[in-house]
Length: 119
Image (tube, rainbow, N blue to C red; front, side, top):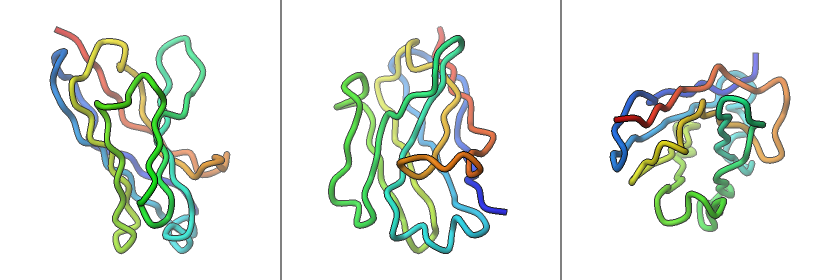
């Protein structure tokens, strides 16, 4: 079954850092290297939002304004894995983080990984 598997979340204090990983499983992995991949997040009571994307070569990452300069997306196509390095985390970054293709494929959503930023 095609889907993504996220990991690396946790509880961190404001100003701290986390590195999230996401691996494509099943048939999602077979074409991972040729697809744009995005990191999404959903905070309590909010809709899921796209926060970062990366093209197949990794050359042109893009970010939502609220995370620019703090988050870095990267990918390792040999491992079918995308990463999100998150620095200077703030309470408003608290959310469940997911990855998926961009545009997202509904059946590819994984369980996500929870990030909580709190003192």
